[in-house]
Length: 225
Image (tube, rainbow, N blue to C red; front, side, top):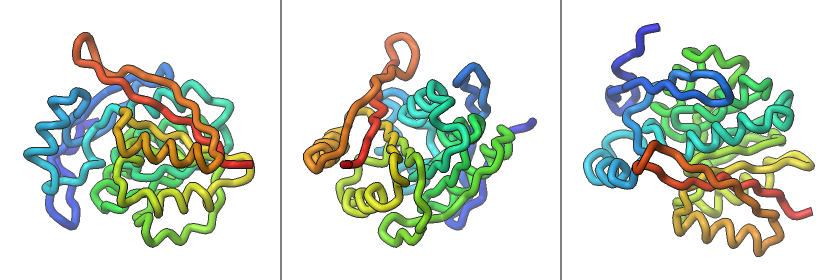
């Protein structure tokens, strides 16, 4: 299948490129605006392209780590209801759907939602629902078995609405998987959740090749009982 070169959004066209990545023994082809695996790549993106294109349509190491983590838990996701927050390019939710989960992918940016849909269709991911959604105006009454997100913990001005979603949108026994490259604001939120009675554990992944690697934590959060 030929990869599109642009994605049309309400704010203009976004240039795309394709990445093929093996997760869970299967190759996935995802479109994005550029890979930001290393610190230098991220710094260049933030200094030259931030504000011009949505953050989520780039390929971030947290999305790769979260997709790999989900692939190691096939029984935990099969048949479950999954909410992906800040879905971006959508790879983690695509992997969850391929395991048999019922996935709702959300993002507040229309370009990211369109790219999620495009990547889902390209990878023949079954039964994903795509929604434009703002955390500050969250109205979804559904209770989910899993809430997943890559790089969704870092913005301190989003911590209050994010906590509200985590506290109200999990089904009994539900859990959260959130991937983050150990950013300071993210760790402070995790510490606050732990102080409030949440169980917090993590798996450390290393993303990249040779000297160009980056550590990412996939944090498994259990609400207070």
